[in-house]
Image (cartoon, rainbow, N blue to C red; front, side):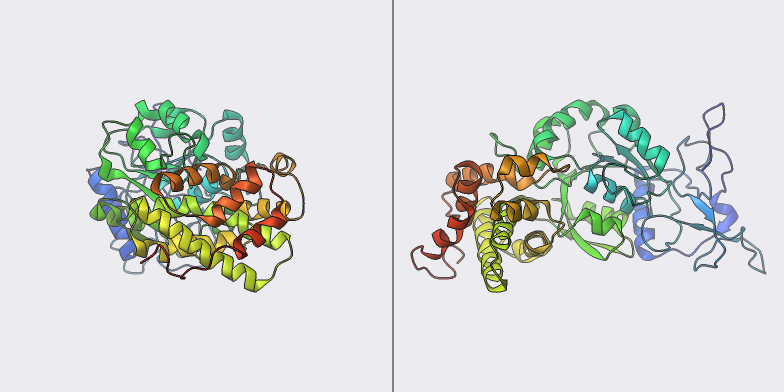
Length: 436
């Protein structure tokens, strides 16, 4: 990895005029967005940026023995002489070079923050903000996060830091990947370092207790001068460990400004991570928070030993519940049939890697909530969100029987074995009750 010289510049830059490249339409689109944010002649960098920007490398090049598609060649060279056997080694399979300057800041170095940093490194220089400076140091030294996803190697274009200003200085895009209970405090802390026009995307799936605000609402409450059109959410069936290991996955980027969403969209995409856009911020964000409650219920059913029929019925009725409340909150019905709703609900309710599902399984086996949470390194958002979801349901006059039973188990000491009988013996109703 190149090092800064005494004057703070980065050496060994290769200007764009010296090479030609093959890039995909998605890469060109993302680059066009970055150029609009950073006007001026771009440089495609083998080892570093041009000295004028004084930024760390956007694309780390390593020497490999095998040939690759899209290898860099000298302009005007009839023989197509390769610049060594240089190619990028970033998150996901081999990717075309990214010929522009863009910096993404990921706030939060948990499992999801770490995984999305690897994804974004396909196209960008990534600053990964960690609450503890010691953890940031360990990430940089090991090229992995020793506390979360320790076996996943991070690209060289990911640089961790515990310093607020260093993380956010000159960034083009902010991704908030902190738990819902700490979201407000972190954003208040770093607010002075975020420009009013910088897009802010929440990756957090939760509802704030007490205020019952979604994370994008908290963002706009704190950043009063920020353009509301630049605040959105990335959500969907995104288990961090699978994405970090480059297993194919899809997500949805919801922003009120559809043009801006489409401009940012390519910056998230690589051959194993596909992103769609959706203008329904409320629906996408509500679905991501509500499904965590349902995952606990599904885990309880698994822990009690129930089979596929039970789980299928529970997931289907859970989708009806979160759709009713999500629409009452202002979301669009079709959103809940997409990645943010049905997609995220399925994976959270059936995967052994789902933290909320795991809590439910252990509850179903008879363990106490306190001892379960004590053993977990990561946050199970559903445990906190359930109370807020029930308060929202009461506010909007929406019936949520599954969430009500989960709340009774979590907060009132009801035995998990009583959950299913309570649901099965309710008054007979139409399947479409509350949905038409």
